[in-house]
Amino acid sequence: MFPERPQPRIAQSGEIIAPPLIGLTVVLILLAAPDAFFRLALAAAAGTAVGLLVWIAFRLRRIALALSELRVPMALAATPEFFHHYDRLGSALVAAADRADPLFRNLAAGRLERIASEVETLADGTVVFHSTETWRDAYEALLRSPGLTNYFSVAWVRSPDYWRDEPARRSLELNYELHDAGRLNVERIVVIADDLWPADERLPDDDVLAWIDEQHRHAIWVRLVRASALSGEPDLPADFGIYGARAVGVQELDERARTSRFLLAFDLAQVEAAEDRWRRLCVYATPYRKLLDQLDSDA
Image 1 (cartoon, rainbow, N blue to C red):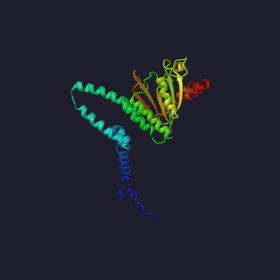
Image 2: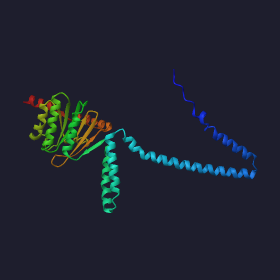
Image 3: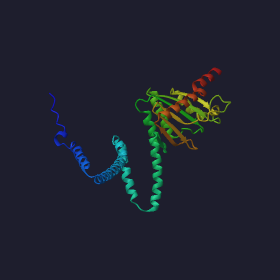
Image 4: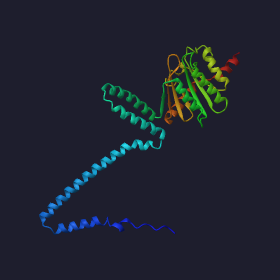
């Protein structure tokens, strides 16, 4: 019923039996030999054994080195889109190393240092964008990604021009589209500089208020808080977004309230830290709807 197993190779060649037989023969010869010859043979055997051990250690070291050099390509082999770039970078580095000009080598080394730092950032799960358009593309892809149901955003408004440029306008339209369709629950906390929401005013300045009220009319849950209310917790005022449990994004703005850099981290620990900041902000922030209700009741 079962296929006949092949006979063990030892029964065919006897190659495993041969070394012990040879060793036994040598021992018998040495036992029959004079003492001087025995000591000479023993010394020769010991020297040969030490040499063999050194050779084996050297070979093992070379094997370990070869395996360590293969570690990266073997690890990337299962990820073709990464292996392709590894192959390109390796070939390009070899070609660059062939250039002997010392100034070129110095400039290239500096550029490679920056590239290596960026790749190390990627290894930590963080993608850095220096262009508004490129990060908006990533922002849209993330909000539209399957399985994402919640988007919590914190906006730190320090200028009436906040989110007034065209890319920001398109991002808001995307929020409205997905929230209105019931595909994504969008909530936003707006931290407002005191000069844009004076302490003696019930609501922020009109320029800021129009942006907030528009979101409210799309049924986005908006909360407001003055920056001065957070003076005891300086880490809370920030521009960041929480994309479910998948990622957290941090936005850095220039003096004209335009995005200068955007960091997108696919790291659970950073997501949980951002969620903790969100919960702490909720303690201080007041729902915009509640502020409107208070105005209506006072009217």
